[in-house]
Structures are given as C-alpha cells and as structure tokens.
Image (cartoon, rainbow, N blue to C red; front, side, top):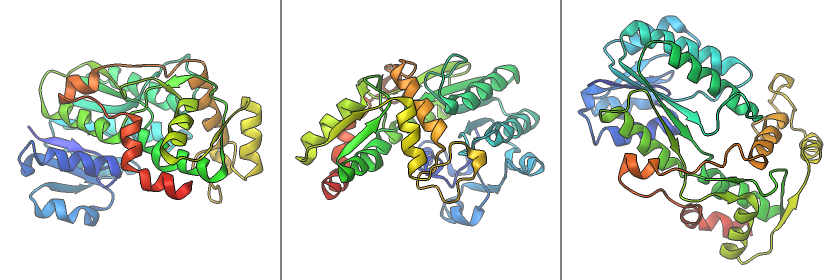
Length: 305
C-alpha cells in the first residue's frame, strides 16, 4: 500500500514520515516536496522522495504516480492561494488513481463559522466530497504547542494576554497527536468517508491558559478581555496588516489582523467548542493535555517570566 505525503519537508510532514517509516516499508512511502534535497536522509532510508509543487500542476502527475493513499497536508497559503493549490492536488490525485485522500482540516468548519481561516477548509472538504475518491477529514483543533511555545511566553513577557475570545472554549491539541492520527488513518484500513475531530482532552478558555501559566511560572499574568474592534486596533498599532493582500513582508505576526480577530470571535461564539475521543480511538492513547505540553516547554515559560 503506497502512501503519499504532501508537504513532506514541513514540520507536520516530516513527523508523519518518521512515524510511517515505523509502520510501512520505506519503499511504500512517497514523500512530495518542492525541495527534494531537504529529504535526502529519507531517500537514503529507501523512501521515494519526489519533486512536486502545487503551484506547478504539471509536476504532480509524476509525483503522485503509483500512490494508493494520500495524506494531503493543508498548505499554509491564504487569501485564495490555498484553495487553488488544493484543487490542483485533488485533481492530480484523482487522475493518478489514488484510492483515499486524508485531509488535515480544522474543527468547526462550516458556512456559519465566522473564522476566515475555516473558509478554505470548508471549500476543500466540499471538493473532496465531490471528487469521487474516498476521503477522510482530520479536523484538527488549535495546537497546544502554539499556546505553550509562543502565546503564553509572549504574554508573560508583556505581563498580559489581550484577547477578544472572552470565555469561549477550545480543546487545544498537541501537534504530535494530530500527526499520529493522520498516520493511523493512512496506514490502517476502514477510514474511508469518515470525519474525525482531533482534539485535546478538555475544553479550555484562554483565561484558563493564563491561569495555568501563572501556576507554572509563578509570575502574575493578566487576562485582558477586549472587543473585536479593540483587538483589531491593537494589531493595527503594531503594524499587522488587516488583510493578506495588504502585504505581510514587514508584519511582526505572520497572520493578518482580520483573520486572527475572526478566529477569536469564533472561539467566543462557541464554534470551536468541540471535544471528542477520536485521538484515543485512532492511536490507542489519550491525547496530551495543555499542561503536559506546557511542562515539555517549561523552560520557555520560565525564561519569558
């Protein structure tokens, strides 16, 4: 059973490749990347490392040839580019005879979700439903790693976490649990046309995250609840463009302001308040908690404090 992993030189893709090498013969692993040299170590282990670029659809026929299952890792492009890239990948997979496409989507997708970041996930899921190839949607929650490694240290350094998410809750999930679930779906049978919500073990508000940071760091940290307009004004004040088309080259944060504010609105309104046991069902182990992920990054928290 040949397994394709797209975006294989990225963080998620590399971790997936590492786990897959423990489950399937290396020769059955097809790793797609725009930078084959970056995956030379995997080629030395016997994996098929192939050039493929979603921005060059003609490159994908050879890249996907012979693959039977595919892990389609969502690209990091926004502003319409992601959807065009996903369309190219899906069309090429269908033409290549791929028999299952597992896609890394996001929890709470749907037409009523105000989060801009979910729009292209919703559209990609619709493409996959219509393409005729069995699909699996891996609807990952927000990474606990991002909270532990960036959000909380940044807040501790500033002395406050400003948020328009209010007391809305989300089940933060460890990236490694998301990867393990994706690997399980493409390396074992029975996941065709299934939807999995990949979440952590508990629903938490950002205020809960602040309380945990205070406990673990021993330093005070305020939770500054603001309106959407106030949060957007803050992003304006530090030079974050409101939209991707405004240019992101000099932005201190790699996401546009309106997208981030819409994400927090979605949390506040309950669109991401999804809790499931799918991590345990797919991997056989309970998902990591935010506390566990924070303890793995305790040095960053204490240094920031």
